[in-house]
Image (tube, rainbow, N blue to C red; front, side, top):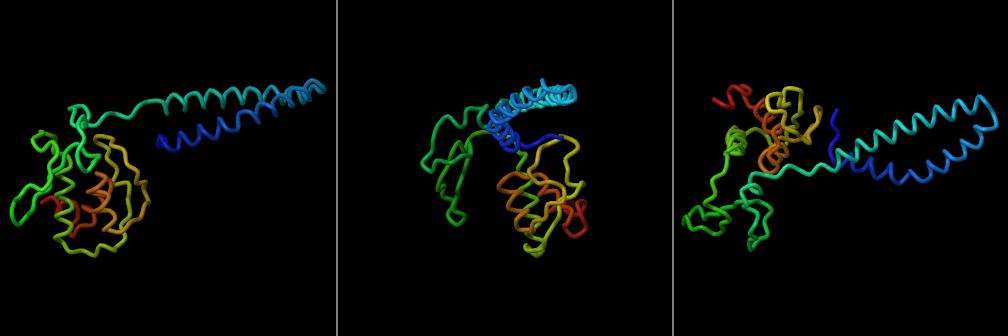
Length: 194
């Protein structure tokens, strides 16, 4: 089971913060272990367990040290220049729909993969169905991406309103939310993509 990076870092911080008291307790146990044979056996067992736990923590530290994979925009150098709005995104385009005047652009001529266009289309199809946005939807095993193995912050069993699912699908590119929206579309996923 993979744990999210913040959870791993929290566990590492807690382990480091309790290391000194644990070492002091271990020293006390060693003194008492010398006094009795039965206690000595227990101390050796605890020391082995402590060593095993330390090895686990070293593995956690190695996992936590792995840098995040760069985005497509970072690879293409689209984050190199700043913008007046200090946006985190690598590209943006705002157009006045009445006059077609470009109000803001950032890397507007960059050619990018269209992965999120599917989520945008999902949002449009769901909005046009006029289903209640306050209806609660549940993330199920059916929403897990088994083909590409993409990650998600939404665990199976998570319950959110349709509006919250749309927000996550569109603003956070949350695949499980997009799939759940399609499953709850009238006629299911097949009708949503038709």
